[in-house]
Length: 219
Image 1 (cartoon, rainbow, N blue to C red):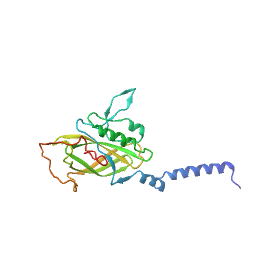
Image 2: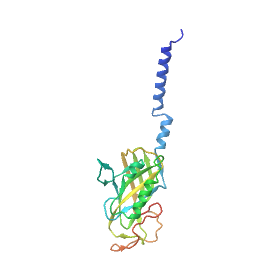
Image 3: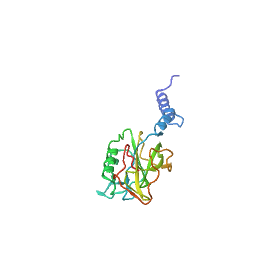
Image 4: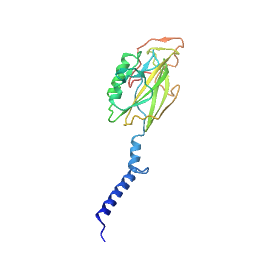
């Protein structure tokens, strides 16, 4: 006896449901491909490192609340849109040159293909961080770094600490969820291009207002 139309329709619906369930299974190749695309490591990351020698934060959240602005310190965050990037402001005390670099860095990011990871940090005035790599998984970002002395022609104050912000441009689209973050580093760097080893602990070294060089290498 040939099957009824209702039987055929019912079988088609069940087959479609089964197919959809199979696509979302943990062993599905497409799911694994998506996971790989949102996990990765960059050993030559694009990172901006502005500092604030006169405050405890570099970036503030300038979002409006009921029409008013009450800027708050920005903690670790994944910036996923130009709209969110526009809310990020440089804090008082950040040099004008650094303000311009922060704004350009955020505005030039292609949020359809990239994500900015923001992380506050701290460093001694006469030191800087060299970032070795950054890694990401869904909901988590980690980076590796080392510390070295800044060039002797850059302004710094021995033994003083300054606020630092790290802005990484990740070559992946991540959602804004950040469940965890981390960093690991050493001091001093194993290798360095500097030809000096010590800055007098009681000296204030004159120099430029900012040490942002290629890639925003200020710290």
